[in-house]
Amino acid sequence: MSLLDAVQIVTGRRREDARGWLHVALGASQLPTHARFGELYVVRALARGDRRGDHLHPGMDEWFTVVDGEARLELVDPETRARRELTLSASDPQTVRVPAGLAHCFVNLADGPLTIIAWATAEYDPTDVVPFETS
Image (cartoon, rainbow, N blue to C red; front, side, top):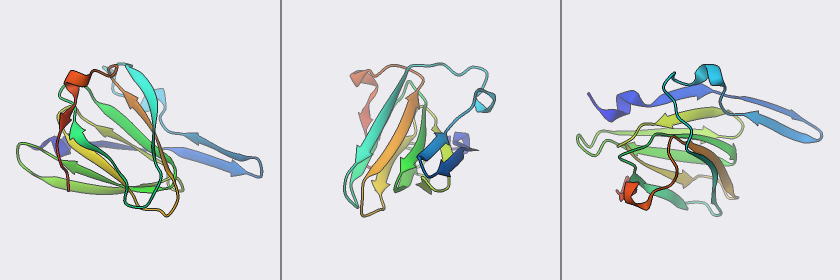
């Protein structure tokens, strides 16, 4: 079995009106019962082709949702080299769970900025970041 089989995708909700938008990335009912909270953070890429990630975390899961722009999420199982790519965009809200140990990288597909909200099951620990090229 590949770590790719443990990737979870949930549908979000986005409501827009003249004032702006509300993006609901993840609800409590969509989380596994064992889910832990570590930290919430924002990832930003400014130009088309910018890459954010190219690493894995042996000790934590991460959840990602694109709230501005469009991205390709590259996923690679470091043991089997199995690969999967997902396209995520603010206009079609989805949240993706990347399990611990799965290499991942976001590539900005738009001409403008890419903004991603991420939730991790542990606080940042530099010893839990292992560089891994997904391309």
